[in-house]
Amino acid sequence: MNTQLVSQHDKLSRFLFEEVSVRGELVSLNKTYQAILDNHDYPQPIKMLLGELLVATSLLTATLKFEGDITIQLQGDGPLNLAVINGNNHQQMRGVARVNGEIAENSSLKEMIGNGYIVITISPKQGERYQGIVGLESETLTGCIENYFMQSEQLPTKLFIHVGEQQGSMMAAGMLLQVLPAEDRQEDAFEHLITLTETVKSEELFTLSAEEVLYRLYHQEHVRLFDDQPVEFKCSCSRERCEASLMTLPAAEIDQILAEDGNIDMHCDYCNNHYIFDQMDIAELRQTSHSETVH
Image 1: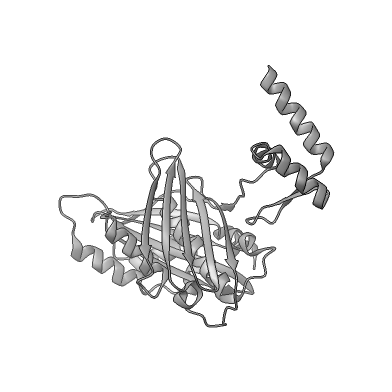
Image 2 (image 1 turned 60 degrees about the vertical axis):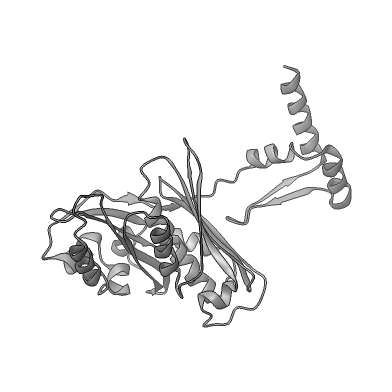
């Protein structure tokens, strides 16, 4: 992929229709998406689903009016028992899938998840955590998330998600339209914009700038495009967090693991990092913890 194309990806753009009460977002992801797939040997249907989840999470995170996180999680009893993407208001993303069975090449969402549901968790840094749960009543992830918006009585929202390959690289992109609070909801105008947006092609989202996509779709509308926001893969794991977690375990349990395995290997599913702790490391942690307690 050439430099010009790369520069257009991993950005989220917000836009506003000035003559109707509708806002929008557009995101195109390449490096962020690839970082989530790296170090994992996922079947193709899982790669595609993670791309859809990534786009949906990025778009929904951009609707936050506060500092915090959104997690979109699929759980079920099928061969894919977990798929999750976590993002925050800085558009820092991470995700993982856990597979415990064979995934056929053309598996549908329900064939992968089985009996399951989608969980959307909103965690503001200040304020109460909110969690919404909806069943997999739609055949697509997009439909399931739109059902969530309908059930939670939020503003009418429509998602458009495209995932695939472009010049040999995995790409994920999408758009969101959302009605703004207003006395006159202008449902006809919203439906008109949905009809226009449904014509967008994967190749357009994968290769064109936000300005070009919006012009192609809405050249007869008055659209204001705001500055874009970079999107990136970022895992929150660290050795310090592992140390803090270890110190919450009973000393006897830690000693038993050390005796049996020689060290403690704490593995991060998201980024595939390993944090290794041997007997000397644990002794130093205990000494530090004891000193802090005494003082």
